[in-house]
Amino acid sequence: MPYTIAMVSDFFYPQPGGVESHIYQLSTKLIDRGHKVIIITHAYQGRTGIRYLTNGLKVYHVPFFVIYLQTTFPTVFSFFPMFRNIIIREQVEIVHGHASLSNFCHEAILHARTMGLRTVFTDHSLFGFADAASILTNKLLKFALSDVDHVICVSHTCKENTVLRASLDPLMVSVIPNAVVAENFRPLAKDEPIATPRQPSSGALSPQRPLPLETVTIVVISRLFYNKGIDLLIAAIPRLCAAYPYARFIIAGSGPKAIDLEQMIERNVLQDRVEMLGAIRHEEVRDVMVRGHIYLHPSLTEAFGTVIVEAASCGLYVVCTRVGGIPEVLPLHMTRFAKPEEDDIVAQAGSAIAAMRAGRIRTERFHEQVRMMYSWTDVAERTERVYDGIAGVLSEEEFYGCVEGEEVAGEVGGSSSVVRGRSGVANFALIDRLKRYYGCGVWAGKLFCICVVVDYLLYVVLEFIFPRANIDVVRDWPRKKAIDETDETEKLGEEKTWIT
Image (cartoon, rainbow, N blue to C red; front, side):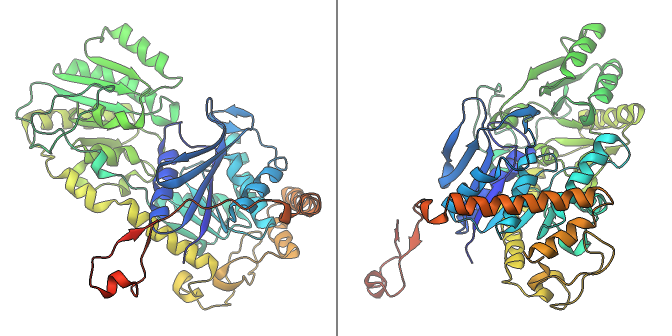
């Protein structure tokens, strides 16, 4: 059954990143499967209004004020008039939000439920429970997900974290991992010169480089922030360079920790051993990775870690920290795990360097294995099943594994069981929505109920001032469709053709 889906998030291209790539790849595959997908994000420098990307993917760049790390200022209600206009123009049926730190995402879920639309949320991150920032984020997440139809997490660790943070019923949360376009992350081709990030290369796959290696190159591609373990990297690099004279480092990425990395290089006189490339585009990642032999990922927290899948697909051996959902991503023969501690990272990375130089680690088959494990087509199929479940196409038993109409324990918004609608989906009645929000806390619950009531009143006012009949419905992007089997060309036994 085809759906019209709106992907909503503060994070999208041209900003590089895992969430941005996930939204784009999932959207294009859903379009290939016959669905209509639009993307709603904020305006970036040089990108405002409506843009069309490959395969007819339409992007709405909404002009809202950005306050920090490409996140918009939380206005709650001012986004509603423009959001409603887009939803009606595009005849959207499902709103799919992404990322816990995206204000656009949370506001869109609230407004979509007010408009009577089905909603899905995908969580890409892990958060704690003790610091002030995490407490506020978790309370906001609980508010947004109190009335959501279904939640998707990118790993089982992420699911456990999200269920605890938002007090969700585990039946409402599915695990659908990220994927990688393996064709875009090939090992170095035979007789292919190693390209610079600005000069992409191509060619057929090559066998493993000749062994033993004279130089072992370690690649790091990451945002240079504290949570990515850059402090551990700064401490480990001088020790590894001193212990292994044949080790070299290539670091790509930007962030506040870039200055600390440069100071470390200057202090230890490692200019000829450590190369810093700065920020690179996503299409340049492969050209950087194939210059190395080992990929080092010292992150302190990670829900999935798409970059290590890309590294393995390029034929690199992965050394990473055993945190979050990382242990779920790759099989053991592709990875070496370390504790998120300086000494253990140095020990495991050093062991990998020595083994790689001696030829004890072979990575020739990594690309094919990764290609078989991860596919965006599979991700799209599983996401489509979630849409079928919340739309009522699948029965309660098929989707949730329980009998239709059965009370679901641990419902969001309170400790008591609440009977949900068909396929376990929360209904749209205002009184039932208020019951779910009221249980979010002694004071927060009352505040959330006020927000929902105001949002509903605003929706009534908008329906009166700007009637739906006055909003033009846009024409869909022309899609290819197969000629009916009863067509004359089929009767004549000719090969099936395609029309637009």
